[in-house]
Amino acid sequence: MRRRAALSAGVSAIPIPGVDIVSDMKLFTQLIDEINTAFGLTPGQIERMQPKFRMIGYEAAVGVGGMLVGRLITRDLVFRLLAKSGKKLVAKQASKIVPLAGQVASAAIGFFAFRQIGYQHVDACAKVAGELLAAKR
Image (cartoon, rainbow, N blue to C red; front, side):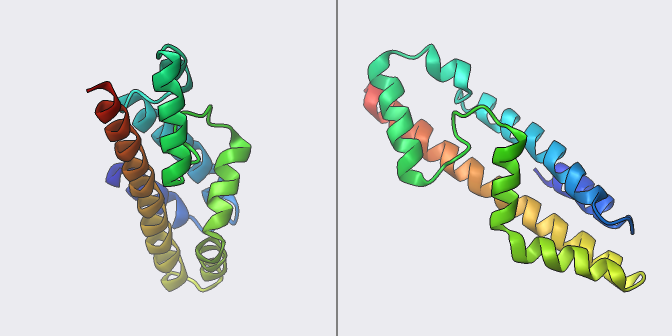
């Protein structure tokens, strides 16, 4: 998580507006796919579950607000998630106007926003996986 967040921050420091958003979308899509795979919550893995457990998994995902748990990650879905962090993204873009200090601020905002969203997804996946394990007992 930190490595991807650091990479996102590095791209954010580039003073070209928009490059960081494209990079964030690609990095975040890869990160979500890796997290879902690690927890056994990719769409394919969920489809192979028994119907009872599949329903428990989907209900748990909805219950914890994990909109990316068990879903095919599309560009639109990632964009909507990043839009939820709109104030941070606007601040990140606006800070690029100020030379050097703005680039550092933009990188810091990008790092913390990326990391926060990633950790929230890990927490949601952990809760869903916990519900599934409890149901199997």
